[in-house]
Figure: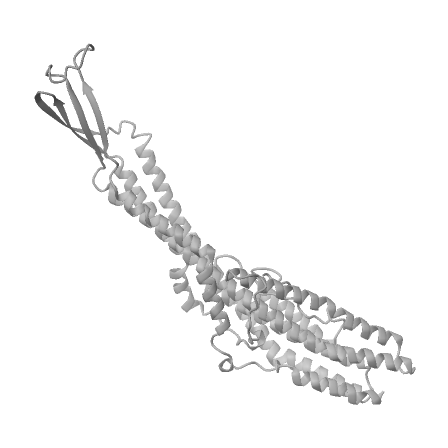
Length: 474
């Protein structure tokens, strides 16, 4: 068996040297504070988004309603004739026969026009708050899609690390079986392990294409437009915990939903003021001239007033309606505030759990998994264990690193949701995980089992708002 040791150890050393040192936490100062590629993608999405352009046009349309609401009703110009008898036109002959030109202008009760304009202006402000929500959501969608693409790429790198050792394992077990030193089961198991790599590889390739198409859609580009980046998801620094004391008040002030509801409350109050004023009568002023041919022309001036005779069923009901709407708007603000506070506390707790799992990976799991891999290689060198035991340990180490990436993705997803100030659940950043089972190694020892448990714990702690994150949500 020792004749295979140099070759196996050389391959292991090659893989080891190509693998990023994930067993230690990455200092924050080593990571770039901003990613130029991501910043460029966000700018392109904000500049080119047809949805934002549509919303901007609708806001402009809403603002055009303000001067309309402030304007007076259109005047009425009327023409007429009054004639004595039916036999012939008596204008200029009879004093009571004349032509008539009349102009009538309606007027609102003082204050109504200003309130109408306020209601229209506040409606435009509600639309502006909705545009703010769309911009925040678009930025968050770009980040989720970009980080998802990076996560898929990193998972592909981890998968590629398996290939040379699994190929060599297959060659070694086949040679040993042919010379009578190994079993057919070992050879078949090595072949099966290599074949099982095809499944996650195909899944990751599909997810990479989906994430790329999603990013290009968000920035209004063709689906297959390449996005060159050298960033790695594994190099992102762990996010800082959410400090509820310093986060809550700014979030309550900046939430688009709350701001929209606050503006809606102002609009409801002004609508109530208008409903109360509508109980006051409006006016009409009419002025006209009546030419009488050769006789002296006449003129007329009239003032009319509307009579709210049906106020009990119209104006008073309108006041009651607006009072209920104002009360409902106030309740909505209260409910949105409670929901936002709940989401912030929820995300703070989930992020704390995710960061705790990350510390567990950095300080324990990856170190133990790395140690198990080295120990298996050493035992193989002395002939105490079969070569596949070392491969199982390697698969467990890869699975642990994949679990670390998945937990980092959950932590970033929580941070993005907090930046988005969304009131909904946290949307995941996911990719196909590289578990020991998916790579065909079966039970990979205590380190692999610990990785599976910790990955489940990370999903439960960091992703409880949105459920499983085993697939890419692109």
